[in-house]
Image (cartoon, rainbow, N blue to C red; front, side, top):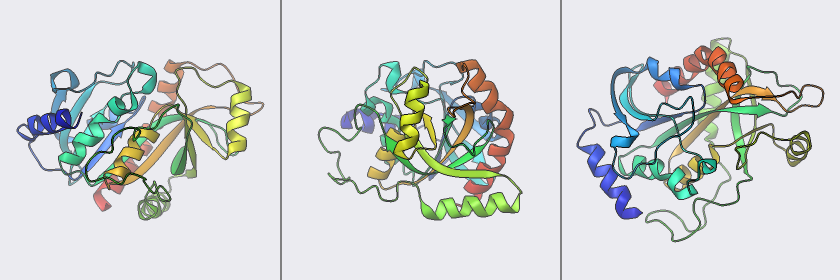
Length: 269
């Protein structure tokens, strides 16, 4: 896989119009943030050597180079998930490529189910920590060069970036929550009993992504910032039937606010 990572990075390096040090992963229903990118240069995943292909509705499946505000960025419009049948090494393959291309800071967004009773649909939750409830770890197996065999995760999400986000949200009068994100295998949404169990574990929101990418990004030495849009609720008395389409609609409704926060975050990073 390391050979494939180098091959892919070299292929992209010859096509990149800029040299970004910041990357964004856009999750379910959040692809429209890509419209904020100026001078976009788009490369469909299927054209990139060794890249997986996104199979999820709402994930466009392309790599974008351009500027968000005044900052050069690399953006993944659509990500990969364990439930699609990929291994976690395949899910996190793009993060390894980003590292080879010189990315230093990773911004990750997702749609999540809220379990904190203070949450409502449409809330933005800054991720302060995570719980890995996936059946594997992307670092299992041979250790990649330049990364520690036993990775310290006491600050998975940069405290400095979290403080910056809170300051920007206050300045712009954007209401934000903070909490712990838990990642499951999926693709099923949680049962009421699972919601209750995850809440007792200390989780505030649950989803099917982000954690593997952040683990590998930290293994590469990147700073990470994560934010969830609460698109459904796993709270007693508020649990109801949910579909992927409803999740997308809920994410799209609040996306302009998240885009405003993320744009300012990147420009001050």
